Amino acid sequence: MNAMVRNCRLCNEPMESSPFSMCSICRTESERVREFVLKHPKLSLEEVSCLTKVPHHKVKKMIALGLKKEVSS
Image (cartoon, rainbow, N blue to C red; front, side, top):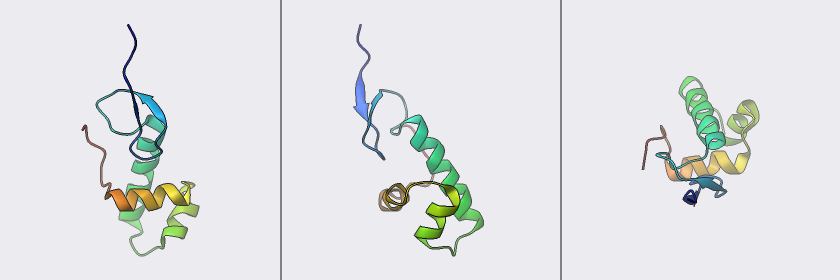
């Protein structure tokens, strides 16, 4: 039996279907960014990207998607 595959909501890479809409790497990065922004809300997108080591385009997409905490979709 083949596992169902879908694309990660954030990076758009194929991933096995799971209760999450993001792959494990993006979930980890999303959580890192979320926690960091809660502690440092006045930093720019560039600063958040640099200090969390999450690529700028991903942080920007997290903001666009309004990601607060990953929940099952």
